[in-house]
Length: 291
Ligand code: COA
Ligand code: MG
Image 1 (cartoon, protein in one colour):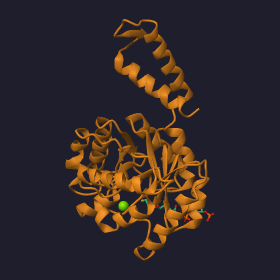
Image 2 (cartoon, protein in one colour):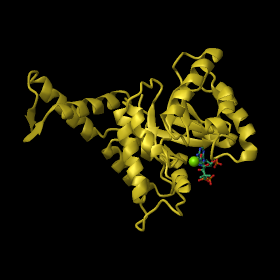
Image 3 (cartoon, helix red, strand yellow):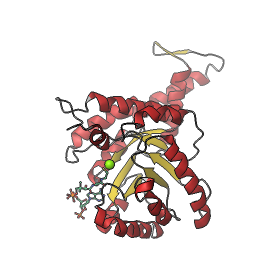
Image 4 (cartoon, helix red, strand yellow):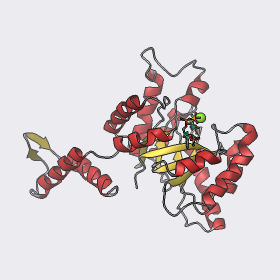
């Protein structure tokens, strides 16, 4: 199922873990990395493992953002790969090799813990280091059955580049960050995976979030990261096909069904060919799986 909203929940906050469950998010990302202070990392690992064990039968998918593998991430995995876990968010990767490495670890841990082989999926944060953008092409040439999608981040990249901000004068992302955003989108699609847009930092600005998410959905992203429960409903709406889109998609599919041997058909004075049909089928598929 396509995940529209991934809500970050600091892994050391029992209160937020509880609150996240009722947030309406399609998935929670229980965070062991940057949202947790170094002194709280151990406690967070324990709390996240408990939250997975106590997972209710319904509710959001549960993902965990581990630390980079050689900075505590392996210890994170040893504790959180257990029944109840849907996926791992892997931050600050330089390239696909780290995803391959994680896949191998998961293969073993799933067997140890009685999870279905291949059930734990992976969402790498694919643009957080200076090297990362150059490795994106490799995602398109490898078979990575666990890969759910690719997401991107602008905060750590700015730090890695020695930038004082990732913003331009108008307040939007500066050019460098718009470049990696587009690269992540294209790499995800080329890999047959979901493009997941980054977070919208100003969590009190609901209107800005709605506008930004609508633009993101138009560009092809299928969901985005959230940092506050108030953002979830807006994000879910932006990444769900509207009634008008669903109705139009039905008409496109019907037009092709009525002309089974045609490569292109006309509808309302517009030419439609195979890419339009594929797009319409994708909208109907997303709609069907949400209703
Ligand atoms: N997940 C679950 N619950 C959350 C939440 C989150 N991400 N963010 C806020 N809440 C809860 C709060 O605990 C509070 O609940 P309460 O009234 O029962 O205590 C309620 O929602 C309202 O929160 P609010 O007062 O508006 O925000 P805050 O000042 O408590 O928290 C942040 C602001 C930014 C610290 C918080 O939203 C947060 O921790 N976000 C996630 C940060 C993160 O994980 N970053 C890593 C990715 S970059
Ligand atoms: Mg970070």
